[in-house]
Length: 83
Ligand SMILES: [Zn+2]
Image 1 (tube, protein in one colour):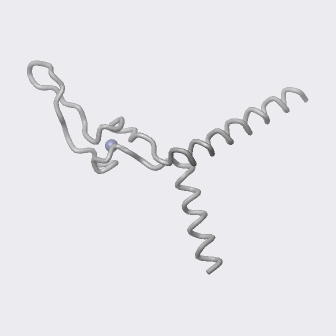
Image 2 (cartoon, helix red, strand yellow; image 1 turned 90 degrees about the horizontal axis):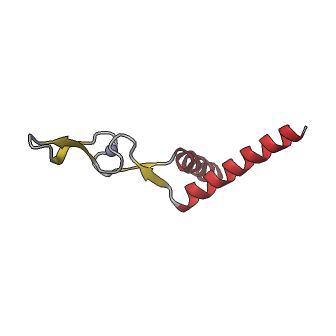
């Protein structure tokens, strides 16, 4: 029983912290380019240089968090339903 309580408390804590994260910072770094907006390429001397434009984030380097995206969908649906 205590294990169940511990597990549910842990899940609740994780969910609350993710909600706070989505409220405080709705955008995260793009996973493909790691926030750069482009891929890193190297020239022949081995120096890093700007590579291809990131198509996933269109060069912005940010993505919307999944939780914030779901919240935005919920708010949009709620507003359309209550107008
Ligand atoms: Zn990107």
